[in-house]
Figure 1 (cartoon, one colour):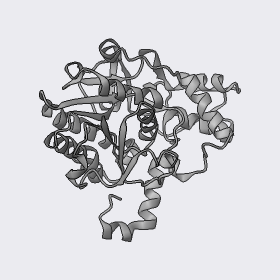
Figure 2 (cartoon, helix red, strand yellow; figure 1 turned 120 degrees about the vertical axis):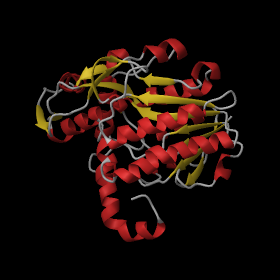
Figure 3 (cartoon, helix red, strand yellow; figure 1 turned 30 degrees about the horizontal axis):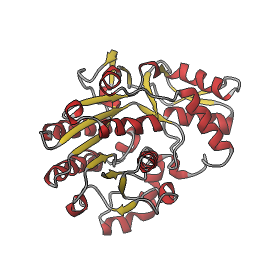
Length: 336
């Protein structure tokens, strides 16, 4: 089975790519490599790497592809606000283009990497049937992509949306702008966990390996179970308030609980239900925030991850690219 992963060198994509290779899939990775190729260098002899953009890659790339896992995007809320128009072009229009071209080129399965942030701020436990309340450009672009892609589903083209909880854990393309990973880095560097005010906001969480396996569950499922469907990817037990999460991380690393506040009170707060993916696909996450935090802390200690690498903070790296390469980017039509 031939699989195309867009964004396959990214934080989740580089983890997902390795699992797919372990399972014996024929894998192609399409990525802009704005963060370099380090994350896939180790597997470069086993994967077909294509440097291209989802907005204008040649459709011929999809010839013979059986399934597309569409992860390419400008990730997270702060990055989405850097240049909202570009966020919409890539995260919404670009991914809608991938889905339409996939259907046209007889790809049989397509999975969109969406996010639970489309729920915004709401009370109660939110399911796939709940109203959406996107508060940022990033979340709005995901919502629009979902709404344009799901109607493409038919008997010959299975289209599925995976709304992922906030991801954590070690990845070959490490990120420290995610809640758990960022807290661990703060503890590692300053012996204090940074907590975004006011700490009462709820978030659902999932390990990078678990969310990768959620994609694979959909990939390997009977199309009748997943076609035209939305699934929240996570675990009911991993809905946690941010301040309590910080305590949990300190416990996992076995250090005194010291913390510092930062930022304005977070406007996003949501708890998400994950019963549908559990009951429909027998999806059960294996990892917990405590295990993920310890994993990231150990990676920092042994040098597999560097808290000083500017590429680990997505919005800062894109700002760097804007400053350093603005003329080249304008000439070549690159996204930033």
